[in-house]
Length: 114
Image (cartoon, rainbow, N blue to C red; front, side):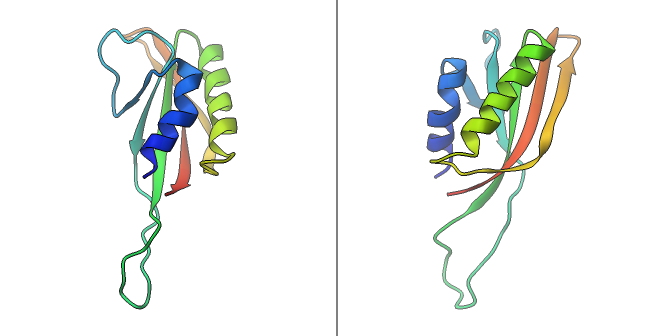
């Protein structure tokens, strides 16, 4: 299962404020949300279930400034590509903004196996 490991790796970078899909209202910044946005499906020729699953995980960072968001997503990338996750980045970080909420953000996708 990938999610518990993702929590253990990314959670400390945001004081445990990491949430699947969306954060609760009024969550202090910075925080992280993540979603599974696909992955690589495969199967064995023998027709038996695979012992590993792949997930493409989109990690979203929300912060008070663009600089804070970009610094945090880079720290997350450094953490995700090392053990125990050994994730592979799928592209570089992308800046995000939510002008209505006054938030700045960044997102990046990773290929993770678990």
